[in-house]
Length: 90
Image (cartoon, rainbow, N blue to C red; front, side):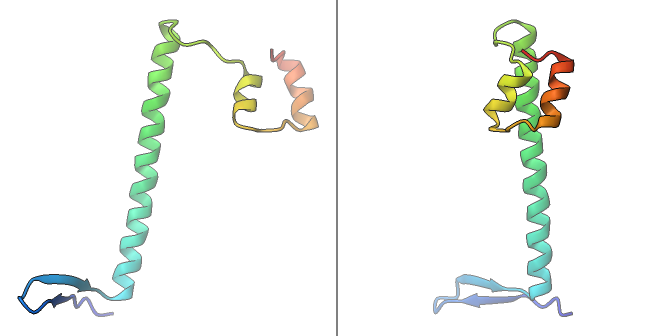
């Protein structure tokens, strides 16, 4: 595997592109995917902590499990329905 990086210049000498081996490109793509996942997780957790803070201060209406699932467009299965009766979801 070559780690050679090629820089492409225009007539005036300004770098206009970079060429890297495909293995390097695939590694960069995988790394970016992991960074995006971590970024999304961080944002989701930040939002969750903000909601917990609002719930704790009574500034946000508390949501039942049924409301939460309907917001996600999750259709409960029969097994879930029988379990939800045991949990007494509102």
